[in-house]
Image (tube, rainbow, N blue to C red; front, side, top):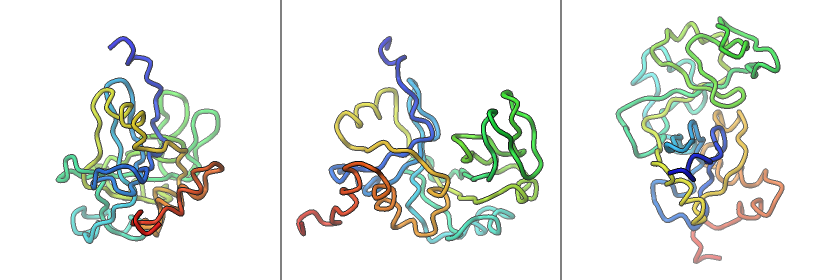
Length: 208
């Protein structure tokens, strides 16, 4: 495992499924990586809305969830568990200042709202045990996920080597996109590289 200790963290980046990825769980998926190191990876699929309203499973959080106000399927693992992601406008790392809502200083000197832990930039995980009203004033957007996507040690690296994923930068708007069915194309289209051309790839390659 000595070589694995050199894994460069992709936490906060997006995994965008390539057209070659055969796993139906991740067809045209856009995954936000919440954790990535030599011990494995964890993320949530941003573009898999379900028909279930957030308010039907989490009392108090439904009114705070952005449109569409439904639960998203974050991946095939632990579908009976809920995970919250929120964008906090103005919540920046210690190099700047955080604004809005009740806050507590973190170990880097920046302020973060109670019940929210930064993943990358203004995107962070929500502790769903926190009373929703404590976060309401600070929230820019909230999305609730059932389940998550997980990879064991070295598994994601192998998939990247096999060409299953494109790795691109995330933006706060990816968590709150009101048209998740178009997110795969939208993320590729904004790339200033040949990836922008992949956005035109047909849903059925046989039609090309």
